[in-house]
Each structure stands twice: as C-alpha cells, then as structure tokens.
Image (cartoon, rainbow, N blue to C red; front, side, top):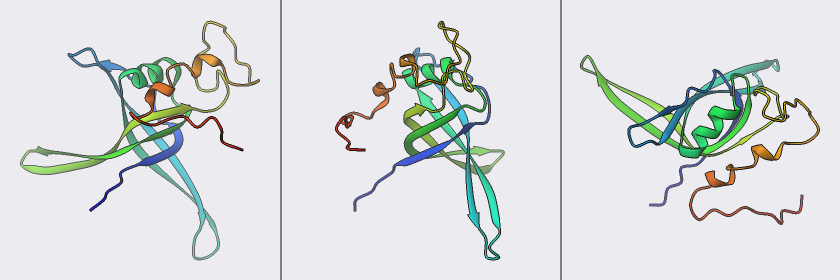
Length: 150
C-alpha cells in the first residue's frame, strides 16, 4: 500500500524561537505555529478558528529560524506529521507534531524580525540574506522549479 505524509502550513509564530543544540552539536528548535481558518457556519455567519501546531526544525533550518524569526513572524512550513508517544505516571500519552523539512519566511524585511546588519525595515522587496540557506531545507531529491510560468 502506498502512503504519503506531507503537510504545508501557513501561519504566525506563537512565541520567540528557543534554539538549542543536542550533544552531537545539531541545532534543534520547537516553534509554535498559529494557523487561522475563516469559514461560514450553518447559519451563514463567519467564524474564525485558530489551530495551534508544534513544529520541530533541525540543523540549519533551526539556526536560520533562531536568527531571523520571532513571535508573530509569518512563515510557511512544509514537512511531515510525526506521532510522539510516551508514558507518564502509568498513562500512555501521544502528541501529533510536524517535523519541518523546509520553510519560507514571509512578509517584509524587519516585520516580526530584528533588523540585520543593514539595519533596515524596508518593505521594498525581500532581503537576499533570507534566501541564503533556505534552499538547503529541501528534502533530498527535490528540485527548485525556476521555470514556473506564473
């Protein structure tokens, strides 16, 4: 039987990034993502629903997030679902999370992020600093489509 485990989320960080390093020297962070959904209910009234998702980033992805993202930053994350299970006081527990494999920072330079060496908060385009390293987050074998017609 074939299976497919892919998640794409667009939301805002719920807290500042807390970057940590494990004993092997690999960077890791767990970010909280708030994803909003607006839809009509049975009465035709608009309702807003927010889903909170925990996302784990590893390696260079975690380091880039720690350097440029902060609470409220808009971000697009692509990854896979992972079910964590453990036992506490004899009770089995589980939690579904996303392992982020690729992400894209959204918004303008300086929006939700501390200003970098250029000190700017300009909204005229995206700073090339934010592109560096992001393509490294693509899963092995995935290419970047440069010839998309739109």
